[in-house]
Length: 95
Length: 238
Image (tube, rainbow over all chains, first blue to last red; front, side, top):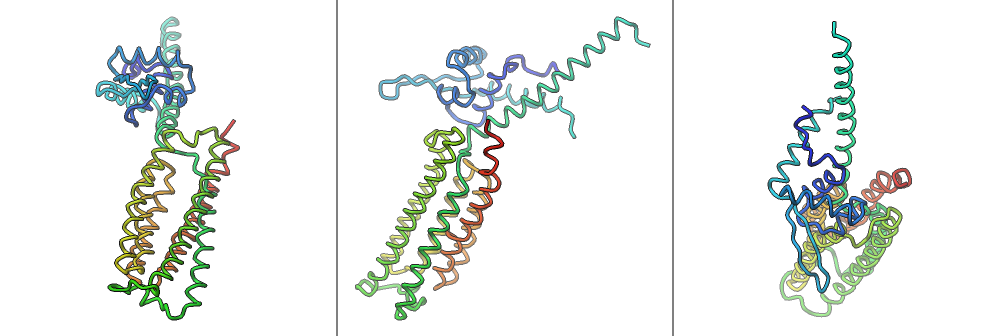
């Protein structure tokens, strides 16, 4: 049962990132940082890990002169997150 | 009988499963809260609705008094004056009533912004964050369409359909925007829509339905939202 839990989502921050991306389209770095209440550096390292797993897509562009990076859950990421949620739900006894 | 070594191993397994269950429960709550916070604007204040309703009732009273002082404008001809009425006897009262409605709209919006701004600041939300912007856009688009449609009704000499049309479009706008804020907004939208549809079959009673929809319903739902959400703010914020 516990084996079904995805190791990639063990961290609260990664779980949070996937939760936000599951119900939103592109979300930029600053919005994610404020929603999760983490530092830029901490968020960036978790995002890089998720990016390497191909769970999130990255889009870099300029808004005026300022660079803006946005993230979106990939199809594989959304699927993995759903499977992880199902595994969590099975662990919790119904009352 | 389980051998000594195996039993402690067994206990360890039970313990770690229990811990994972506890963590998982916390994770689920964390996920639910984030999903809600990232898609819905939860800074909306119930008092915004109450103040908008109060301004609407005030406006309806002004319009009602004006119509009482003009017995020549019996409700029915005003409702169905279709065709050819382009003179001052048509545009005079229309200008007065539309100005009253605009004044109500402006004061209601100001009041709504003020109460919501106050509550958002207290909760630490930003009034211009992405959820608030999305809520505003999704409200404004159907409302703008409704506004233009009402101008067309007035130009075609159908002022009696303006009150039902504003209620219908406002209800649809709320229904559309409700996925980005509290669920009560969905029910408010449905109620406004229903009232607007009834009003469109009751010519001459536009002002009454208008006062019910924009006045009474706002105060009822605003009060409900105040009791359900605003009042719990101190309990939920650190």
